[in-house]
Length: 126
Image (tube, rainbow, N blue to C red; front, side, top):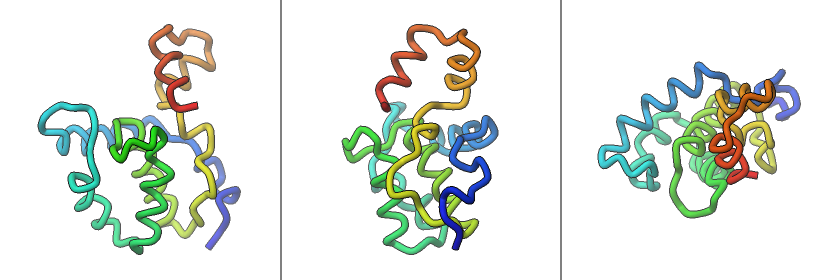
């Protein structure tokens, strides 16, 4: 397997990945809490057919807030890491900083048009 650096820019969530992850997240978040626990995510994670050790590592990397649940961004991060691992890439030792910002907010921040709310939300994951 290739190292994370060999991802060719794979360390950033694309808008397409974000949209796809949000559709899955919303289908799992029946109560609208904005957070998913491990039991709720289990079937989606297991469907990836990755080894249990990889799935544990992905959960630990994606749970940026270390609260045992995944919010929308953290779920998208987990989905991204699953795709990278399925492509043969090793998981990073630590979560790359560029994965901690949703694509829409990242674009707005780079262009200088991010709202205070977007900057505050992004700061939560730093």
